[in-house]
Amino acid sequence: MSTPAVVDAHHHVWDLAVRDQDWITGPELAPLRRSFGLADLVPEAAAAGVSATVLVQTVTVAEETPEFLRLAADSDLVAGVVGWTDLTAADVADTLAGLRELPGGGALAGIRHQVQGEPDPQWLLRPEVLRGLAAVAEAGLVYDLVVLPHQLPAAVAAAKRLPQLTFVLDHLGKPPIAAGGLDPWSADVRALAALPNTVAKLSGLVTEADWRGWSCAQLRPFTDAALDAFGPQRLMFGSDWPVCLLAASYGQVADAARELTADLSADEQAAVFGGTAAAVYGLRAAPADRGQM
Image (cartoon, rainbow, N blue to C red; front, side, top):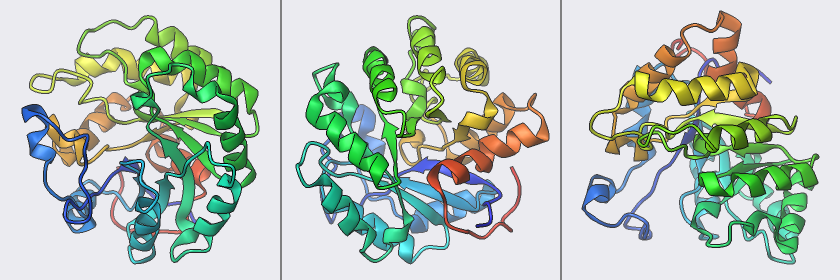
């Protein structure tokens, strides 16, 4: 399987005519209260030199994953899908197998649940959740972690319990960039990175910073901490489009990622901007002639 030259390992789409996105509430999120489709993304990705993407779930609705798989089947851009299924269901293994049989099912690369919305900070360690996560591993898929900083210790414990499953930390665990404090986030991320079955995404950071006044200098202590903990071979770039639009354009996010990794070697940058994502998600071949990042 050929490796895409540049991968955006984390973006979303949604169609408000199909279903509401009930998390988009309040005036601050008003710019997101419209539909965003692949037709909107394609020119942005091309301009940033992105040749392949990973489409990630947005809501805990079973119908969304088959829809995303169909999008991937018809897209030259979407090379992988991280979907959702009920990890606590007794038939989760059968559900995962069924998803693989759907149109575009070969693009299914991982599963994600909105752990950040769970009031129980130990949700990942519930017996029924651990059983579901084991089924994800058995299916040959990875698990994307979308957690808040206080949920990182449970993520570490879950990754220790399931060494056969690769855990992908989305958005670096949503560090408190706007507040400027590295601890205890940094120590918890380092504990997660100490486990060999974990990787992380340099994604979603501009919306954890000051939306109206962020800079690479504000992001750098957190990306440097992640680079030190995981190393570039276990990090991957993600735009978090269209959520990133609250603070930055697609191009600005890509440019920031370039600046924050400019001191890496060419091989290390190649890992962050494609190699890691292709290996972790087992991405299908995708066009590689849309430029380099």
